[in-house]
Image 1 (cartoon, rainbow, N blue to C red):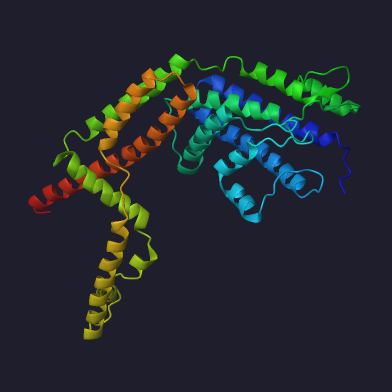
Image 2 (image 1 turned 90 degrees about the vertical axis):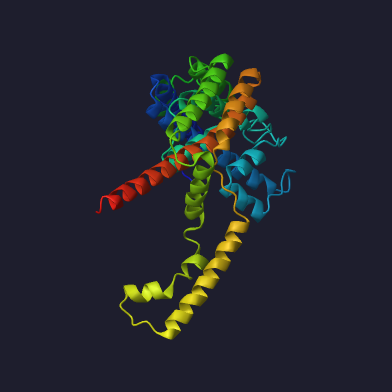
Length: 367
């Protein structure tokens, strides 16, 4: 049994969210790409907390005989647990139930969903792959802040207020500068006022955003061109090498390939005498290896290709003509991810070529 007073839980949830938003605001206002990256990671966690609480409430209500929402089958719940996009989709549906956060309206609007997807993508790159674009993460973080602040407001129930706080909680509310009506708090109205206040100074003008994103794509494309300018064989040779590196990354741990390593080579490493049986086994392994390699390559499509540079420059020009901020952000995000892959593999390919050239030079010197 929960021995706490019912009013404590919403207060503490409200306070925790508010403190995180204030911290993220300070990080973003600092202007440092490193602190903007920290803010994006924190904002994504806060957004997921709002989504999680909304889903838990929806699941509970769907099992009630008195509320006509749902159902939410086990497989749908599993998918929501694993997939951010599914969580957004489920939380974008209105419920018409006043007891759900937001008074029965959607927690996630169409516009907010676009920004949340982009922010979540940036968070994944920073958190899981230690990658972020210092030129754009500040602007993305500011837009992400606005979207998460909207979740903060919509997660509060409309027309729901609390009062009768003990002195310790009143002190906490005053410390957080939460707007009060006498001795009570109307949570939705308070959240709206605080979100508006915190968002001041974090606005991103449309023209500034377009210029930032377009310039970023053009400069990164130029940098790759400069990197590969002296590669022997030109772009086609580089595409082939990048495809080989990417294939190894994706399929290098394929169990069926690993199982078909040459038995002769293994026997030599283990100092086992070569027998005809081993040689026959090696021949069969080579045949099976080739067969498996063929199965994988038939469905293989490399993502890293020098054609991406033309695509990036075309997208940059298109951004300059687009007046829809959300569409611009989505278009940029897709191109940013593709260009990020090319940046990685083009550098690795050039280093691989340099290493090979150095080996040839050393061989010619008789070393």
